[in-house]
Image (cartoon, rainbow, N blue to C red):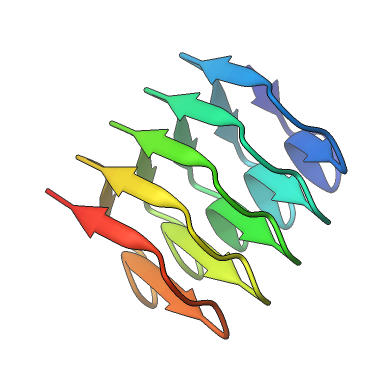
Length: 117
């Protein structure tokens, strides 16, 4: 669990082929769980980003070909799950974003992502 750590609960940066399962990021400043700067082909399963002063689960800056399954972003001051800045070709299945100030799940400046319930 990542909790009250300052900037990010769990951060995977420029790292590929990782499995993140059953993690909780809570009460962190900017994001609970982040795939950051070209973190590709990772699997996130059953993770939660909750009560974050920002984004619950965040894919940023060319984080491509990742698979997110059954993750939850809830009660965050921004987005539940956010794909941003050329984070392309990701597959999101059975993820939820609830009770966030902005969007539950948002893809912005990213393309060819597949979101299914």
